[in-house]
Image (cartoon, rainbow, N blue to C red; front, side, top):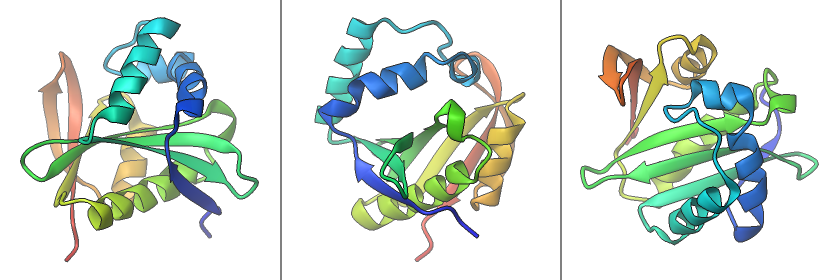
Length: 159
């Protein structure tokens, strides 16, 4: 059974929460940019993402309307989007990532011209890899991405 969650577009009020999640140790270790992000730097990045029509950040909330994660899509000119997902430390392992990823991909396919979604996952991040595989992504194998050996996965829109 899937956990009850809803998705909503990110708002200015989410800036601090996303900054806190981004700087959590395990998140930094699985990220392609593992250094601590300063508040002012994050604030500029977040505001730029909110204004960018090719970027969508969705906030995952549980049944009590508590923010528990985020899914971000960066869309390109090839009708494809790169996805990034994160679940807050206290809520990991409860199925929110799998369910949130599925819902977010359905959302992006329904509300944009995107025909595929791509994910890059560091080789050692097997929990994330399994989440993407269980949500229907296809593993195309190991590739070099941003200086790291990563699994490249994709999901095509089901028409």
